[in-house]
Amino acid sequence: MGGFQGVFSLDRNQFNRPHVTGVDPNTGVVSFVRDPVIPLCTPAQVAALNPQDQCSTGAITVYGGDANSRYQALQVRLDKRFSHDCSSPAVMR
Image: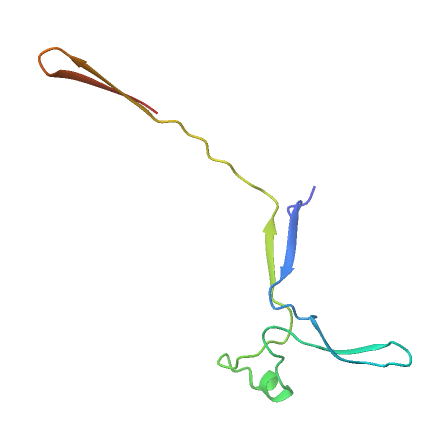
């Protein structure tokens, strides 16, 4: 199998998130525009390639796996007190 088995991708910018702009009451057709979290770059911003611009030209894809992990532990401490204030600790991990 390939190296990406069990891997999913997620668009953090929600680049294709629709913003409904209206509904035609006669036909029921919904009109919408793309409304990403980070706004789209204008053509001038795309041409300038300025990293300071707060815009995006596409999806921001994050890859993740479906793996999980579980940690289990037990720690025990026993104290045995003898006569004359003498003690013997034991620790098990």
